[in-house]
Length: 254
Image 1 (tube, rainbow, N blue to C red):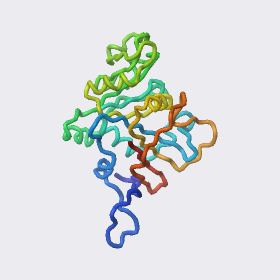
Image 2: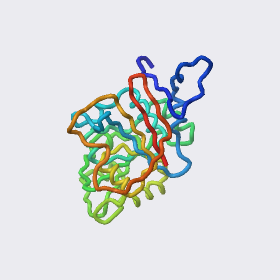
Image 3: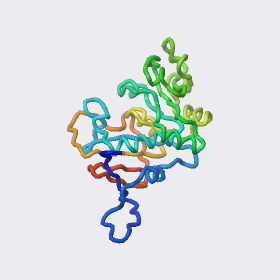
Image 4: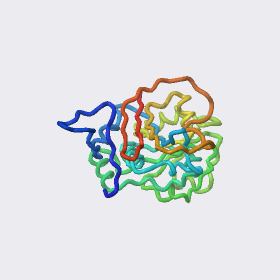
């Protein structure tokens, strides 16, 4: 792929060949093996941030995401059964249909998975647009996690399955249990911050993949997590990858 920025593994250190001054660039199969699928139900978070902790630039995460982040972003989507996203992030980031390129679809089918993962939207208000491409153009019927008191807009149940968990707010633990019962055991969450904070508070986060982009965004943007405070939880560092453009790709997992 022309113009691709190489990614190297720093920790744990790879075995260097004779005379190697630095690790060799990672291939896509090597990156896939580093992230891989878990052997049990698993919730992975994926976020990008600036050096000074910003979650967005001008309101969008795209301003922080470069080639290395997008490369891993695509691999993580390939590896998951379900992509979990909050309704606010779906709207703000103008999510399109969850599609993969031919090579990634082939990888999934070759590993006994459906060609596409399932989009899962978390929404307490059901303020969703059934005409948004994420629903209307989806290759797999999306799932919406909501609660008993929420009323769907016209047309939403035509393009998505509603799963009600909780009386007046979404019970995330119950929702994840339902998803796993549907065969969506490997979940990738792309935010936003409020959903990350709620999942952390419920002790449901198994892994955090964090891209640190070599930018200073300055004051204003929020952090990658928000909401009510929760207990401190240790999350061991599993690997550190560095791209030639200065991007760091960190993986923490319990």
